[in-house]
Image (cartoon, rainbow, N blue to C red; front, top):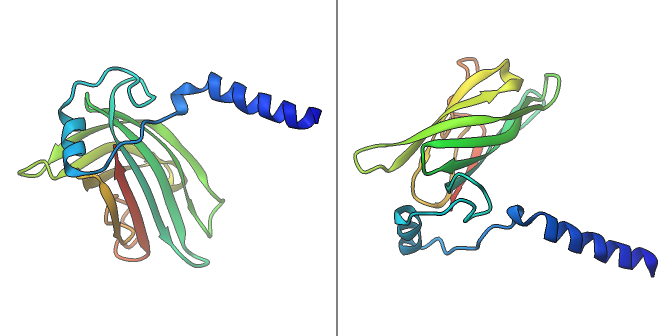
Length: 168
């Protein structure tokens, strides 16, 4: 019984201590997206300081013994800054490398249909600085390895697969 109570107490304490990890649930409808983009957010509205308006998650993979992958989460703030965390690796190499840091971003296209994210450092690829280009509309997207991120020239862009989520 003591173990059960300790577990419940521990979970309750973590929930109270880490309110910044709690995100608001929002509809991904067109009107909700427009509302989020046009409102003046206050710091911490989505559990982060700096007013994030996009969360971008990317999984890009080449299956097989000589394959590899890239897994990133990027939080984009309304002031054109952002931060990222993730990993990248080559299956034939030394394993996964931690990727974490700050980035910048801006809209691109005649109708701001894309977001360009600069400054993503891929440590498993010898510190290669990648650029991500993703749709500005919330949703789930698929493609090949190089569809959403630039990679070094020795990696063919049209192999493998990518899964991308653009969310509020």
